[in-house]
Image 1 (cartoon, rainbow, N blue to C red):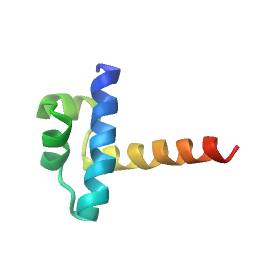
Image 2 (cartoon, rainbow, N blue to C red):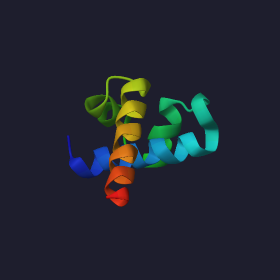
Image 3 (cartoon, helix red, strand yellow):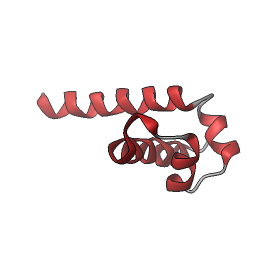
Length: 67
């Protein structure tokens, strides 16, 4: 998996969640990130795994800014 594509997916998930809330779908993330369904599923097995990775990434950024 290309790290650039994975980052685009995670950023798209964060943006889609801020707009759609918990109703965000994999299709929303795929469209926003402009990756294929195959690329999404190569990076994440499902929506929940992607969401968890996006939340953890956001928390890591927040923690760094506090320190």
